[in-house]
Structure formats: structure tokens, C-alpha cells
Image 1 (cartoon, protein in one colour):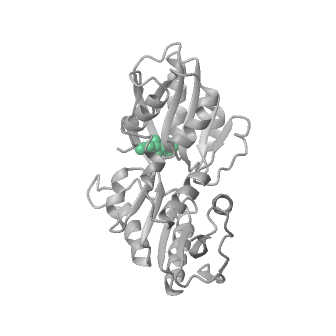
Image 2 (cartoon, rainbow, N blue to C red):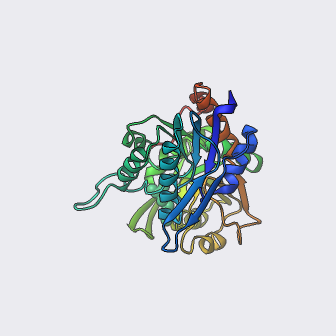
Image 3 (cartoon, helix red, strand yellow):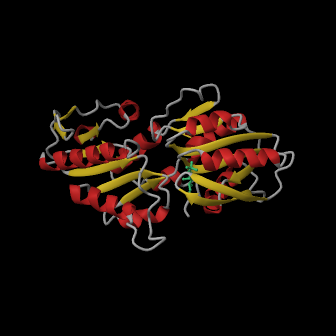
Length: 322
Ligand code: R5P
């Protein structure tokens, strides 16, 4: 059955593609990816895909436009090479935060990117922890949406005790925090940081709802971008008396001075998945990388065999959505 399965990757995250193929026990499809002198993408796949079930793995993390356009170009290439079915495997879906017009005369880029991927020729999408679950509805093709929480929990359980308090760094993250709290057996004891976003890289903390005094806490979020939200949240819960603070997030976007902010944050352990390559430098001793390679490989295998993917998250009754 696996003889019709092909996995290709762009330049965004070759290590994750390699690990996924190792879990699947298949060789990765060969792509020659070059640039024309003016920067345009020039590529050729060197593996036959006629009639094949093709998965193209590429998170649309920074450099966002390079990675997004590589994904689109790969999809187009594979479609024109007569693949039977194309699944875009997008462990991190960028542009997700612009999912509505929150003020006049602004675009909805999450929808635009969904349209681009579909128009390029994808038949399905496989994603991990979309910033908002409703982004699935921006695609008119099937979307399998995986949750990274069990992967992070596996590592988190080795470090924190049952009953550790979960903190959401903003009101929008409460559902995700509740799901973690349930796993940690402290569902009734959430704390929420009341954060107001002023711009893309500036937030202000107004208050902490919930008593963190004397508690070990874990602050959970779907992504860490500039690091401002999570570092500020760590600082304020420490000020309010938390004894030990850990942070856990799916997507380590880590742009701008994020690494520096994390280095200076009063946290013990930092749990990130590898949906995006993590520039671990400077975080080494505190960083715990929770790999999604096996989760994605199992999902790819099940999609290829037309088996249910939801069994992979049956143990997650409260999926993260905003
Ligand atoms: C917000 O809705 C998200 O869940 C994250 O809290 C946010 O994107 C993190 O951004 P930053 O790291 O730049 O504060």
C-alpha cells in the first residue's frame, strides 16, 4: 500500500520531513530546489508521482513568503506531474492571526492563504494547532486538524506534578489552558492573565485572574512570536507569588528579540514542539523539544489508508479553539 505514498518537503523544515519519513519507513521524495538569479523559485521533482498519493510538508514560518511560495510551487509542480491526490502538510499555518476584519479596510490574510493553497491544487490539508479552529472553514477541501497537546503533555508530565496550575497568557487562550488543566488534574483552578494587545509587538498586562500564590504553574499558549505575551505573563505570575513557572507552546515562531525575552524570563523549563525549526541557541539548558514527527507520520499513514484520523485525538475532548 505504501508504494503509492510520497512525501516531499521544501526548505522550511527538512529535519521534520526527514523524521516523518523515518517514522513512515519510506524515502523522502527528491526535489531540486533552486533560485533564479532574481530570487524566483526554480524547482524540479526527481521522483515519479504519477498516480501517487503525495504529501507536501512545509510549515509557513519565517521567512514566511519564501516558505509559502515554495509550498504553492511544489503543489503546482506535483499536480502537473499527474499525482492522484495532494495533501499540504502545514505543521504551522502562518498568517492565521488575520482571520477577520477587526477594523475597516484590512485584509483577511488567513482566508487569502487558504485560497492560494487550494487554487495551487491541494486536495487536502493536514495542520497542527491552527491559531483559530474555524480557519478549517476557510478551505473548501478537507482539513485534518491535529492537536499537539498530547505530545507536549508527554514531556510536561516528566517535569511537573499532578495539580500544577495552568495559566493562560490571555483571555483567548482559556479553552486551550482548560484542556491542559484537565490533563494535569487541575481543571477547576485556572488562572488567566488579562492582556491587552496594543500593536503586533506590544502588549500590556492589566491583571491576573486567579490566585497563583505558592503554586507551581505552567503558562500555555498556541504560539510564541515576539515572546512578549509569555515573558510578561511569567513575570507577573512570579510577582504574584508563583513558586516555579514553566512555559509550553506549540509553535515557536520566535521573531525579533523573542530569544532574549525568554532568556530573561523567570522560567524553569520551556516546552516547544518542532512544528517550526527552533533556534535553540541560548535556550539550550531550559528547552524541551516535543517532536510532532510521529504524530504527523501516523496522520499521514491513516489518511493514505483512508482510515480515521480522529482516533489520534480521541483522548482530547476539549480541543483548543478560540
Ligand atoms: C495570541 O492570540 C496568541 O495566542 C499568542 O499569545 C500571541 O500570538 C503571542 O505573541 P507574542 O509572542 O508576540 O506576544
